[in-house]
Image 1 (tube, rainbow over the protein chains, first blue to last red):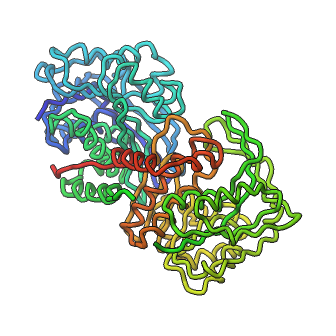
Image 2: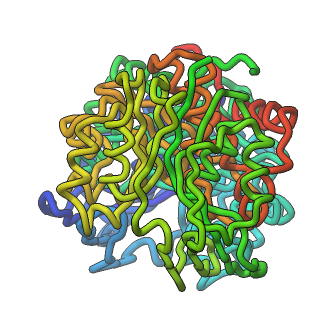
Image 3: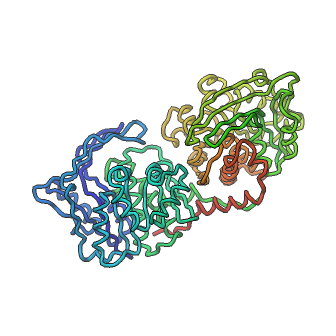
Length: 308
Length: 308
């Protein structure tokens, strides 16, 4: 079992969907990645920053899942990052209603000494310079560094983003972001261009249409599980990334074959995340439920054809 | 090997894409279904209507692939159905520039006697009353009847369409059409509603995002092969359906397990169709190429996970 270091937001989310509204609840990329990775009972730590307005029970919730929170700085008198969004009827698009960076604006990540030699480093979506700072604090080069990012940084901090991209092994982005980053419409060509920017592995997330893993000429596809209801998509991408990173940390095998399994687990865990508001479903998730759903993924994709 | 009867248009297409324009070339649902099914060397016939303006070489091309064309009526002095369309830059949407029904307007399908007992009946996209007429000419109920249709008939002939849907075993439609037909956004719920209209099997085509096969609680997913270039999507859905029908006719097995393989072959054949204009790629396609690509489909989707 490898150590897994996660950097990402621990935040307040407030969500409106056609099914209802939440008040301020626990959210953030670091939170979803951590909860998802904790399914694999790995030795994981989160590096983040919050204000002292964040209920202590939220941090305890992470700690109870075996996540080291010594790298989550609590700024006294500070306020926690807050995002409010409203999903459209099909749940495939959303409007951001409020973004308050608060303590995140001056976030100087501090990696706990015990995790500076982590084998797996998961850089959750944040300013590229924050991601870079974490990477530079590592005392030894991680066996695998995974970067999640988004179009906002492509629009606003492209130069910094390219510096991080050049240093990571895996990048996870969605299909539109892959097209924006590469200037290519075909995802096959987009992945080729992104390979040339640094990452040997490119994971393209397509939401309800699944995810593609590229490594040069090798391509693997994990479908999303077709669901009767999607209740709240918030955190699905981070849960996917957390499952991916958690699986690889647990199995200490970063081969392409192992990454195939890792994205199946990522899809598996993400399929639960969307079933309830916020982190609710991930909090109650059991190992048995994940294994049952793994069988559903097998039924969904596995076939036996003899050549004609 | 079962007999396969196909009803569908044999037509002139004229296509504009960002990569170029064609003049009037061979097209039509019946043509693409037939060419695709002929990969399996099954005993297949097409029922259709054309004018005598259709070059004889087009019918010979079908005949050379072993397709019985005695059910393709040639109307002397008549003109062949003609469709002209222009694809947008991403090739995912298109505008119809011209539709001339011509001889198709009064099409009275006549099923050749030798194919009235076909085990597999493929009703290509046409007016539902034409599809119904073919179904009613069968002397014995086919082992499997497959219906392809589109939103146009939902908008304009819903009552007739529902009569056909009630009588078929399999329906193939795209995701937006499944939502329109069922009034459900979730494809899982959409398939459940469509089951209740008649078809035991529902195939939902998602273009570049693959295809889903539903049979009550069983779901199987065939991805589309990620391609560097899509040159012309015309006929891809029909080629998919033709591969599906052709595989089932060849293997005389209409179990869910067999249908899984059939939609993999459908996706496989469709992935070739889009590589060149019109029927060009399907005409030159070899068995070896299809088998090589089948291996790519396996690499894309097959994984080995042991439970954690």
